Image (tube, rainbow, N blue to C red; front, side, top):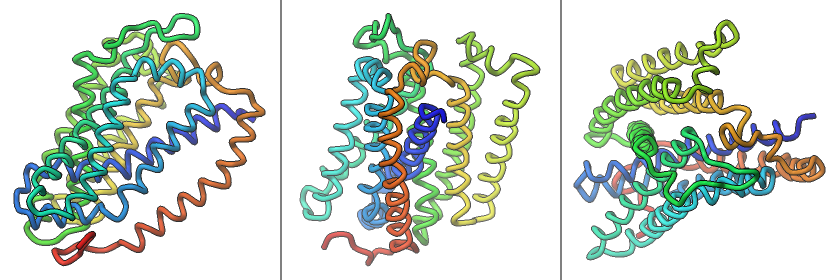
Amino acid sequence: MDYALIWAILIAVSVFAYVALDGFDLGVALLFPWFKREEDRDIMMNTVAPVWDGNETWLVLGGGGLLAVFPLAYAVLMPALYMPVIAMLLGLIFRGVAFEYRFKTKRAKPIWDLSFIVGSLIAALSQGIMLGAMLQGIKVTGRAYAGGWFDWLTPFTVFCGLVVVIGYMLLGSTWLIMKTRGDLQLRSYQFARYFALGLVACIVFVSAYLPWRFDYIADRWFSFPASLWLWVLPLVLAFVTFSLLWSLKKGQQVRPYLWGLALFLVSFAGFAVSIFPYLVPRSITLWEAAAPDNSLIFLLVGAVVLLPIIFAYTGYTYWVFRGKVDADSGYHD
């Protein structure tokens, strides 16, 4: 069995689960500046308060799994992305503190609202910058990072950070459609349309820019006839985009969020196709980065036990807190 490939799939699932679940609550925070009423903000925060900390389980699983299973990739990526990783963690800390403190004060509530917004913005931007840094390539000499402190900071990586922010705001607005009523829900429909169009435009731009800028990505996508099957993804993207906009136009409540997730899934698949089989693009493959098979097998046994438990309690949490959230639905009193 190819244990390195199995683990690459498991870590990819963990990363996507984090984006799908923590993405909407980051997006809800990023929408705060457009909702000024305290009552609206209370409802928005209460839609994510019961689940936000559990969502971050997947981030821990993905990062910890990378260290344990692909130690060489971890040793190269961490020095290359050290600053955005630290910025992301600090943003998540500020955001987490805001969850607890905001409901315990009246006078300082605007301060914790700002902490909630800024922490989420920093976290989302950092994640997008790390994604962009991986796509543009990381300098490696031998088995070590060979670049500088700020190689991760380029116009392209900043653009990728903004794309992730827009994407999370789409997930946040579709989450609010599903969880709220009245004026808050109606305004969320409007925002969802804007962010859906903006995200698709950004995806199209990145899809055109990367093959033009990087020959290895162009070879992957335009080596006919071997690459013909990859062109299913653009067709799926068009279908998902149409379905998302149609569901918003028809005023559906659950499907917009699901189609938003599908949009992320198609983009995630495109990213995976573009860099496979590299964990550090054009430098280190997943097999070169993998730990010995004995270690992979040992860790896989633990994953087989733990992953179903994580899926079970995550699903149960969302089931318990299903339904709409109103003004009288409290988190802390």
